[in-house]
Amino acid sequence: MLALSIGSTVGADERLVMRNVIYIFWTGSNEIPQVRKDSINSIKEKSGAEVVLVGESNIYEYIHPGKIHEAYPLLNLAHRADYLRCYFMHHFGGGYCDIKSISGSWTPYFDLLRQDHNLLGVGYKEANRHGVANICQSQAILDGCKAHTDVSAFLKWRLMQLRYRKLIGNGAFIFNPRSDITNLWWRELNHRLDFILPRLIKNPAQHPKERPNHVYDGIVSQYPVPWTWILGDILHPLSYKFRKKLLRVLPPPNFKDYQ
Image (cartoon, rainbow, N blue to C red; front, side):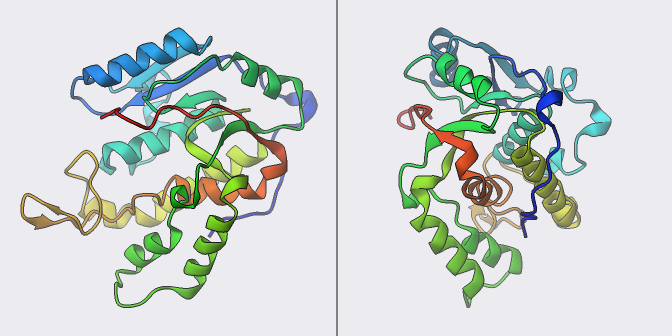
């Protein structure tokens, strides 16, 4: 469960400097496909910010090996990126963007966040209720039970769907570092990875976007981490909790034709 008590981690007089930087992640050892390279070029050309690509070759320039969670190398590649976006937003701040093309400059949104010290972050408005993380499905996978639905988790999910206009999406955002929201996000992420680690050790990911109970090479996956469990399941409730301190004005990246 999310710990929703709020305690400030950085006071106004201690505010860390946020740079105009956008972090993007490629967590695999395979070459980046051309369509993704084109998206990276789009971000570099249009964003007006420094763009930093973090991958296997340079990750430890930013994170000391002893500081990364033990679960990290056992996660699928998508979940590794979920972990990294939280790590970077909490520890460094700045922007994050999926490797998808963007439509224009992010400079005005960095400026908005920098000018208003009451704001914690800027994102884009979740497009519709179907984009809301399915915490009910995640709970069913964690419980290993397909026969019934956890009523509490179902009601929470449906309520979040009704509130989708007040949520930010997970594919692009800007955050101040070590703020109230990133502190809770980071804390909950590590709590969940601690919880799932024994199962992950027994069943680490074998495929880049592996999902529990899906069939790969004729074998049903026992990978234990639900698809949205370590990103949307955490960030969506938090973005509603802190909705008055988040702006939902960032243009979303292009979610079409990026594979």
